[in-house]
Amino acid sequence: MIWQRSITIRLTLLFALASTTVLMSVGTIIGLVVEKHFEEMDLVEQRGKLKLVQHALIKTTTQTELTQLPQQLTDALIGHPGLSVIVVGPDHETIYATAGASFPHALLDSASDESADQVEPMLWKQGHHEYSGIAMTVATGINNKLHYTVAIALDIQHRRQFMQLFKETLWVLFTLGIMLSAILGWVAVHQGLSPVRRIALVAQGISASQLDDRLSLDTVPSEVLDLAESFNGMLSRLEASFARLTNFSSDLAHELRAPVSNLMTQSQVALSKTRTADEYRDVLASNLEEFDRLARMISDMLFLAKTDHGLMVPQRDRIDLVNEIQQLIEFYEPLTEESGLSIAISGHGSTLGDHLMIRRALSNLLSNALRHTPRGGKIEAQVRENANGEVSVCIENSGTDIAPEHITHLFDRFYRVDPARQHSGEGVGLGLAITQSIIEAHQGSIAVTSSNGLTRFEITLPNARPERAGTSSV
Ligand SMILES: Nc1ncnc2c1ncn2[C@@H]1O[C@H](COP(=O)(O)OP(=O)(O)OP(=O)(O)O)[C@@H](O)[C@H]1O
Ligand SMILES: [Mg+2]
Image 1 (cartoon, rainbow, N blue to C red):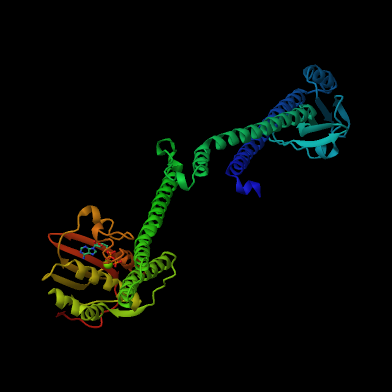
Image 2 (cartoon, helix red, strand yellow):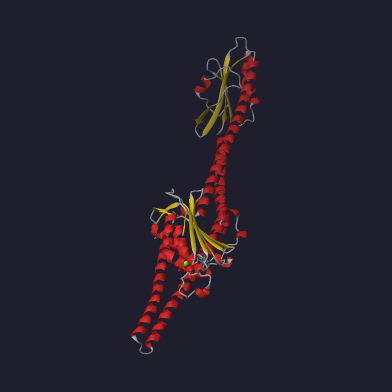
């Protein structure tokens, strides 16, 4: 439904509903108060006239005075249109009656001698007129104290008509008021939502080539500041990811070009003249090296693509990290002996994860350390259980410090500190990127520091209860 989709329509309806409720309540209360006020005024007038007649009857002490009473009352009640009076004698004979209302028996029968201020009005209809009447019994001043019934009626038709008109006018005004507040509400909401429309406008203008557009936070109202900040944050993240993706594609093309052109050159040179079988064998062996490098790069790229898309779901085996590193050290032993390096491992700790993946991450770090430690240098691996339920693995090697400007890029794909070694067959620069994605797939993190001739990679992983502790050295 459109009203559920549009904030403007929804708020406008709410405005209209709120003002309808307020105005209707106020209108009803005003109507009741005014009506009550008129009723009270009418009653005061009726009671006043009742007292007047009562007074005249009490003052009547002789039969002669009683016969003069109608004239007396006519004189006293002159100039009161809509007022009807009846005085009924003890034998139900009418002593005095004005033209107008014909009093119902129920009213006359209900008359008692209570005070004029206490009698309550009775309403009745007669033709097109509506009357309000009160009645009481009054004793005359004549010796035998005869009781007379006096009733006063007031034509309240004009009051009813006035109230009707008053209420109609009130409802017309209120309806106009509700419509006006709905229109003003719509204008206010439309105006108030203009920052959101601005965000939509910026969003519409964004394309892959224009990700540097940002919302100006100075002009944004505080209520949508969070939204605008999140929006800008999203744009920054998108811009960074997009830049990474673009760089990655060009890096990839660049990396693939070198081995392919090597292969082409070597093949062209080999084919330029007739060669001996040994020469062909050499060329093929050299080509194989390049193919090997290409195959490694492609499988690394595939691995990273899978982790990027969350397709690498690590198994949850218990892995004794010291044992794992120990096995890798044994694997690399011929290499360390040749370079005169010493490797030490200490501490204890286990984690839950995928055996092959964790081994690959640790092997990347160890092979890097072996590659960058100068002859006779030292490599130290330390496994430690932290108090916050984590286990950390530090692999530290001696050697030249990595400059701070390189440190932040070490985990980028195809990043190598020394570009001169780029095509020396030493590595494609994907090892640390793979290590990082493996560690992150295991809910861990990796950090690097390099100072005072020591380069240190530290992996933090969720801890699994240790099975054994030990220290050994190679
Ligand atoms: N222990 C270390 N000491 C000094 N520099 C290091 C160390 N580990 C990594 N580096 C630097 O970081 C760069 C990136 O390492 P990474 O493992 O990602 O790539 P690589 O070793 O060059 O290639 P690959 O691992 O894909 O075969 C390396 O080229 C090297 O310059
Ligand atoms: Mg490496």
